Image 1 (cartoon, rainbow, N blue to C red):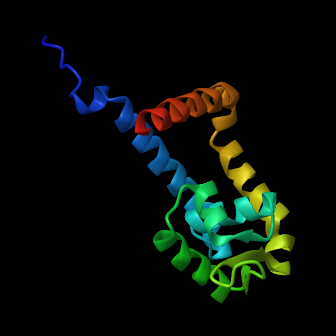
Image 2: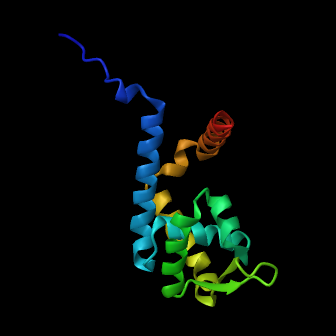
Image 3: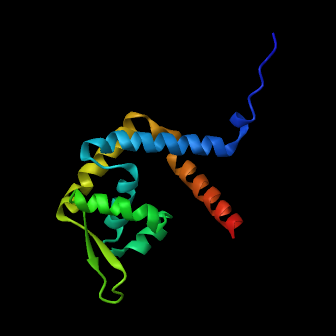
Length: 147
């Protein structure tokens, strides 16, 4: 019986990383749905939970998102009561983005929901620390190639 060889697509690391990224986004999206948050909006919250009162451009740098992509995300979050936007005193063209009380109070609940979802998928049994380390190394390498 002739054994089928894997397609070139299936042999590509980039394709596996792409699929993993897509599947993670879907997993998080399903969990975040009850909070009426998208995955990119959750990433904005993560950045601000770590350090509140950031300039829009600093959030963009942190998440590696351009202003054209980030502004609509932030504006939707402001409309839904997650964020506040105030003009910077130092630079009138810049805006400081801050968490609302709603966002501050929801941090633990949202993080617990996500942890519960990941735990239910047995992901933590896959040696997540090693995987995270390898992905950081890969991203560092790929970033250097862009220079």
